[in-house]
Length: 444
Image (tube, rainbow, N blue to C red; front, top):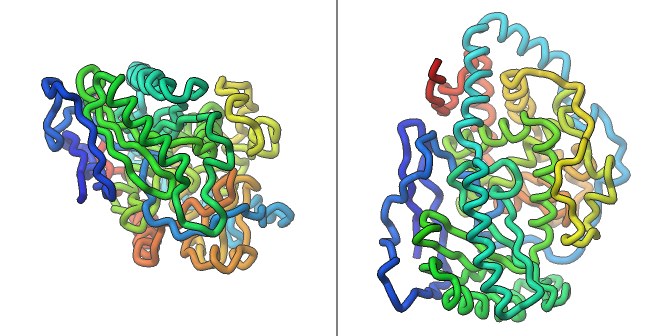
């Protein structure tokens, strides 16, 4: 059974949100159906800006064929060459190329600069929306605590990482100390879902159905990381929530990306745009064998660490190892905005975007993998035999697995073609509209 969540789209909008596969239909409804809504009705946006749908960790990975168990930090002792970028990348020639392009198409270049900023302002999630989501999270937390009194719920992914659009759904991780760390793990080498987590999710489903007034539909999804999908009505109408248990890596990843958004606003600006571009090019669907949103964000992060000089973003694992340690308990994570040193790179947004496509259009993914933890590329032959089989390898900063393991060969070819085609377009004429991204004109 395939369910598509429909959303209204403006003329500047991108295709509707990807369909999600439901492998288990465990539905919970209130006895009083007066608050129920039709499942496939058009959900009107809360704002009248162009809509994109950023969902960083919300895609359900049903068929994960990756290896379980502890991963080795294979990039740890590799010398950092060419500033960590791909070895054949020529910083100077790319900079000169873009300077000539700017000189030739000055008006278009400046219009693209303004367009990137306006695209961000129009689509970034506003504080009012975040507070609205957090109110729903609080109601869910109260319901979870009926069974697990020590539980705490964390908003993860696009709601909390600073790169979410105003209409993105909310992903939530329930940290439940009553379930030990071992109870939350999938045994090494076995593709089974832990029965303690599955049992806990069903108990939580019953509690939410009983205690959360506006939760109108609750599904259990037996994915690699099992989740509950919750649809709301009433005061939380339009909100969909995916809830998992003790997925600590998701919390740490959200914290990491959030801290990078504090350092330089160009990071979330380019992330939002790249996400929109990926949707337009149909390469943003884990279910269809292309990139999930988190991998897209990591591609931008690696580029801003290594693909520009001086770098826009530092390596926080090296600067503050204690703050970003994978061993740090999640309740000790500091979510405030610390005073990180500002980058010495002051390149314009247009130049950053153009360089992003220059960097990845000729990236040899068959030879090189990407490490965020070490801020460098490394040769794929250093990976395990299993990991070398992936057409594209982006190392997850904390658990060191491949965030792009969902990418299949056909999807990979489509990704490469999209980068190369977009590079060719921008080299001819710098324009967001030529990339398929239409941004309304700013009213003077």
